[in-house]
Length: 66
Image 1 (cartoon, rainbow, N blue to C red):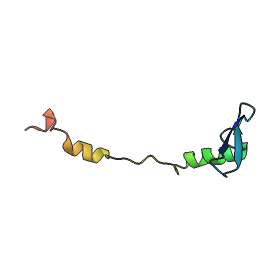
Image 2 (image 1 turned 180 degrees about the horizontal axis):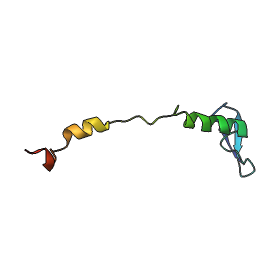
Image 3 (image 1 turned 90 degrees about the horizontal axis):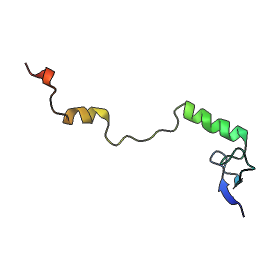
Image 4 (image 1 turned 90 degrees about the vertical axis):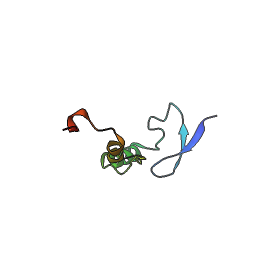
């Protein structure tokens, strides 16, 4: 029995099998739409500690002593 998943783009039910070359997507169109969203940076990973905060906590560099 094949596992059934929802296409991440359109929500259509899709069988997760080797016969489905577009898995987890239902079609090449949905796969391309998702790739385009990544290329346009519509998906982002939230930053918990931005680099600016990290630099504030760092000890002074030896060059900053005068």
